[in-house]
Image (cartoon, rainbow, N blue to C red; front, side):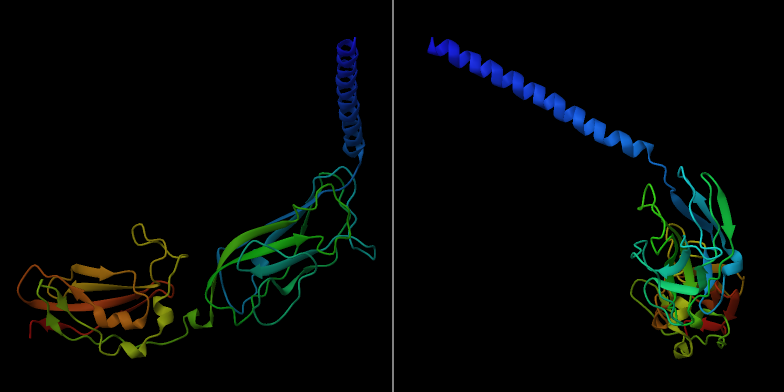
Length: 297
């Protein structure tokens, strides 16, 4: 008898648990349905921009910025005086953008608001409507040479309640040339000399006025055509030519600084000859030809 009562209790417990699970499942499903019916805007921003720029210049005219409402309700703008969305355009070293309004400074800092980079007068956007806005993009003059991201954030002030709040940032990569990279600097032609021939037959012809050049000339230049598989070869390449034929003998495309000009060498196919070198500054489209020297001396 006791076994029957125990067995019956177990059955009742199992049925109650199953039914409870069904009710809970139905309750969770029911809670999600109203959210699908809520009509809200969903703002996104996108833009086109140049792949490189010079520090201290404004590339706003080269940027085409658009805001799109992918939601199901009107997104209020800030024009003429209502509390609506705006857009911030910033310069960053990564694609992580902090929440809130960006801050303008004339000098570079992470996530700095570009000069003229706030779109503050915006219009209401109906669902699926696209609106283009002009924007300024003044690059801080002290921005160091390197790779960056220009990022736009729509509704940085969180004035619009949206279906999704995690899709408001759009970034594009850009290469910034610093002030020392503006092609205004003037450099002399290189002066080379015969130094020695090593045990494996390499002829060394260092540049003796190497101190007159800048390290900036030999920075990595990913914005320029690669050297074979090297996509970050130097801004300035060094080519060695046979002075008798004009044929290129050898070259260097991955120098890191002006100090490397002291390490130029080539391995000849004959016992003597005459050579000269050419420094090819690809960023500024300038070439510097050296004197001609004989080897060995």
